[in-house]
Length: 361
Image (cartoon, rainbow, N blue to C red; front, top):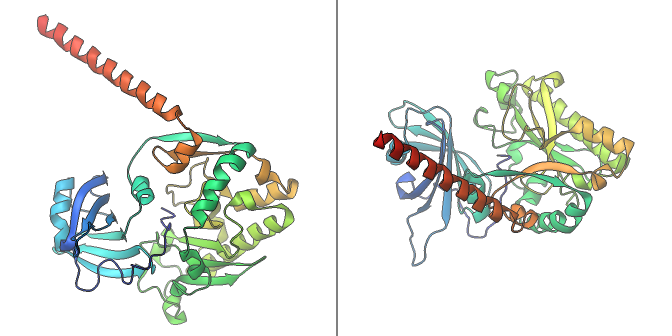
């Protein structure tokens, strides 16, 4: 998950597990996903301290685990020891969560409060292919992007280094510039994350650099996605971002540019132009051919046609139930869902008929 869609909230004044609150204060409602104990996403709430119902909370855990069933995981939650590794200043907190027995350690991401969009994204659902033409973008998608961009107030704090300054590796670049920082999804990164040069010297060529994950985030609020890039100015921004990411990967982590994959997402998870940088051996959600757009290719397209991304048909997937999916396919998915239900009923009926015939024999 670029995993970074955050909404500033005046109610959030501390990380999720501070002020004496531990995992025993979390009430699990259901397990949204469970990958044989290696990763899990749990929806729940903290015990309410007032008259009203507390806001939804998402717990996302990853890495190796001795747990083999969702019930075992839920029983082990309250016994985990937590160490805060990063706090965004908004609803995202990141922890190392270690089972008291010492048998395993989870990387835990906590989203509190969790919006309905974040809950939807964390729940496994069907995906559908979209062929977004220039007209569809202008009439349907652009208004959606502009509305979503207005919700991410946290981004200005990040690009101005008011928050997450310790994660910053570079600030500058062409146009209004951009920042390069360490993505919070890079959970294997050494702790503490610090701007201290003596600490960073120990990061160079460390074994965990194989999981490299950096972001370059534009400081220009008019750039929501690659759709907003134009001509030589856009191409130069792509070149500048790519060069800065390559330099940071090489000088800070000892990872050469020939090992790097640098790309934009479309659709992105949050609407401020940003580039991802990972090693080419690291395959994660978002590397799919329909979503990842290499910066070298984007720059070349813009130099051939300055309005390429204004006019191009872009293909990507959307998740069933998401707002954008509903806007793109009004009524169409309901018909598909009815067809699938009918097919399932027919299949169940055929199975029952076969079972009855076998019993009669």
